[in-house]
Amino acid sequence: MLHVLLIIFLITLFYLAIANRMTTYINLLALQGVLLFLVAFMQLSHINTVNLVLILLETIVFKSIAVPVFLRRVLKRNHITREAEPFVPNFVSLIITTLIVIITIILSNSMQENNLDKIFFVVALSTLFTGLYFIASRRKIITHVMGYLIIENGVFALSLAVGNEMPMLVNLGIMLDIFASVLILGIFLNKIGDVFKDIDVNQLTNLKDF
Image 1 (spheres, rainbow, N blue to C red):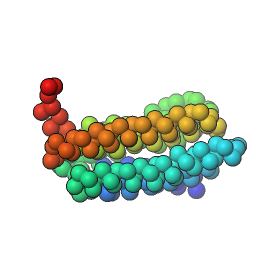
Image 2: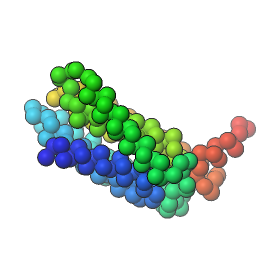
Image 3: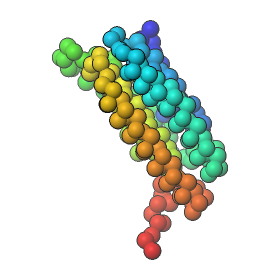
Image 4: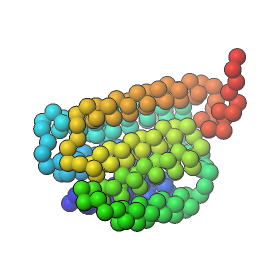
């Protein structure tokens, strides 16, 4: 069952590569939050109540509820219903995402570390690199925010790959980091939306100091 959840998580990366609608991105991010909670709950065999509650807050409440609601409000405020054309076609993005997964599988198989759960390592690195590619290949600033959230999901998965225990302070640090980043970037998006009709990264070249 654990491997099935991780495979579904990988499938969401492929879906992100070919999706066009912003709402689809948000729904997939929410799904990833639910999957991360289920994976963490099944993977961590020795977990106390405090850590379980913190993981629940970090994944279900924050990643799957709070962040999607916040991003939908940003979309509604700036009247964004569909993403502008990316720098590369969706089919090319799908191929690149597939290559990322294949390379991470090859890399994990070449490692001889017995304490490392390789399937978590594959999912984590694939998510990290896909998030970076997502940022580099999309035009709108809000998709860069989503790409950062994908990277954060990869960091969360990587923490599951390197050990069976997850320190509470590390969880709290990751959650606060995500919250602060999305809040700051959300405010930034709202201000940019007041100036530019289309939130495209190319428009940032028009910003000037006064």
